[in-house]
Image (cartoon, rainbow, N blue to C red; front, side, top):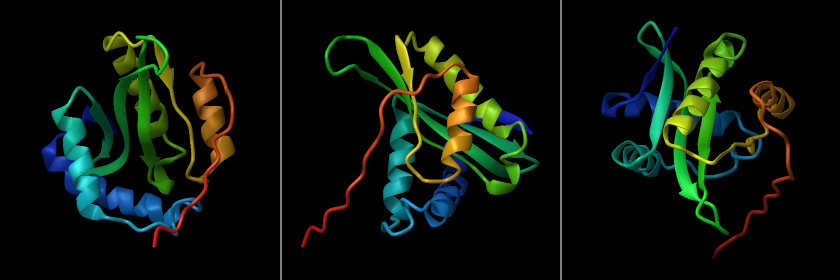
Length: 152
């Protein structure tokens, strides 16, 4: 397995993996999936100061993390955050998740971020995901709540 920065040629594989995530995630599976919107979002990340790291096994993309920065809402601190982290189920017990989070942390440092924030909202192996982040030194703060609205 190899870690590398994604490029435009990887977008189709990332969109396919996004569909897998949505199908698997209890919190997302009832939401509509728009492949074109995801494609545009990924392209926007590649065109900005964000980045996408992927792990490839052979010629297959098996995991990815979308990394972005923003200013903190109450000061000028730079916050690095992951928009989404996903590893195909059969690769979750490999080094792939570790490689992605390590790359995210190193990237945040290279961006001179003051803080790194991450989380999990999918409902996919939440406790395992939290343990993994904590292995890297992240501390748990707060809870995320979610509510769908019907816009007629």
